[in-house]
Amino acid sequence: MKHLSFLSILFVCLSLLGCGGDHGRDIIATSNQISTDSFVANIHITNGGGETTAVETQLQLSTTSAVIDLKEGDKLYSSTIGPVDSVRISDDLFTNLAQTVNQIKLMTRSFANTSFPTTLLYFENNVLGALYKENSNNTTFTVSLDRPIGKNASNSNVTLPLGFSIITPQSAMRFSRSTDNIVISWNTIDDTAAMKVTASLICADSHTIIIGLDHTLTTDTGSINIPAGTFVSTDDNCKIRILLDRFRSGTIDPQLAVGSQIFSHQKRFVEVLSIP
Image 1 (cartoon, rainbow, N blue to C red):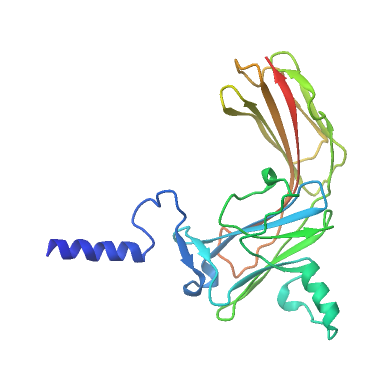
Image 2: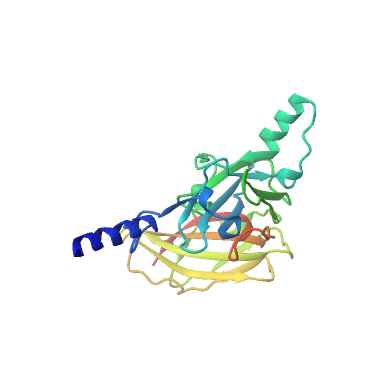
């Protein structure tokens, strides 16, 4: 009887996507069994300084944080011309084809592109994504969940902030960790977005990464300073990676679960040499 009870409990646990840890794997839930108001969407649109913009979305179940796998015709689209269900399809087949390819994209799990710096992507796995060309400044992106059964969530949107370039420091410049201040500056200011600045010390000998600066400027001043002595390390051969993230929040479709969010980013990074 005890043996039978144990098997019953085991079956229930597996049915509910696990009783304990996932042993390094993401727990998966299928979308056709989930109502739209239980979808937590975490959406990030990122331009890395080139002509390519990446749209990334991670979908999770609100009750268990399991990753949602889209099934039974459920699809996620990104668009630069508004919600997918509001787009009027032209009678001209060729015009419609060009519109679909360039402006409306089905988001998939295989959207990697070697021309886009992977260090600037927001997620590492279980991501639905799409890549856009020539949409680098002030473009509004809309992410739409389209469902044959159940409610659509067609209008989560955000506009990319103004792009920028890092003026100082320049790549491969050399700084002393103990005596040199590092002035970080950029060439444009966007009063409608915040700027997050992160500086990390990466040392080859010790294989360590130390975050010395992680600061968000709610008012864009165009520059920030890393004081001498911010990083402490006995290694000689190190580099400092400086990442600038100008970001803006957008509007989530009300059909999605509480906790959903959408952000747009203009990200740039530079690496400099660092000696004691």
